[in-house]
Image (tube, rainbow, N blue to C red; front, side):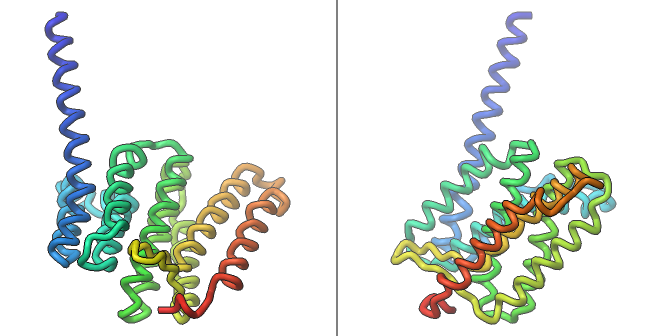
Length: 260
């Protein structure tokens, strides 16, 4: 019996080590294969291959599986897209993205608490909108609007599923629509903050929508918590903080020198 337990533990340790190695390989490989190939295709293929279990199901479960894994796929694909648009030279941003993606795969993604779901969703919003804004700068504005809807829908759904809400279809669609509306308003004046030769580029709209997603979720939780006793004062702090922060960003950090 003792030998069986020891063998079982050894297999578990070996399995965990293989799992960690493959995640690190995916995190580093998806970034640097994109840089070396000067194409996002190999990196995107690696991300999709890592999600093979999502697609290896019967047709009736496929869409449900895709929706359940949208946040993870958005993060992975965004890392690849951001790497590609940073350029073909190896820059500090490539190491930052590779390191972050490894941390995401090993430590952030596996956690399933409500707070973790919120953090995961905010990360997906920030990276996803950043990639969409940079990618759509040379494309039709409808691309950013559609991608913003998908990201807003996915982030909202990820939070609501984890909080065990029974009916969240309308809430997720509304969140997606608000995201697309804000994206449509912002796309005519796209501001991207650059940081020297590091390759780091942060679109203003990514910051705005991340703040909005946080306030939106806080307000939703407060409405559910207080129900009939809900008062605006219950969400006054975060709402005012969000409005002031967005106002500061728009009014004082929209210098045309950043305009793309």
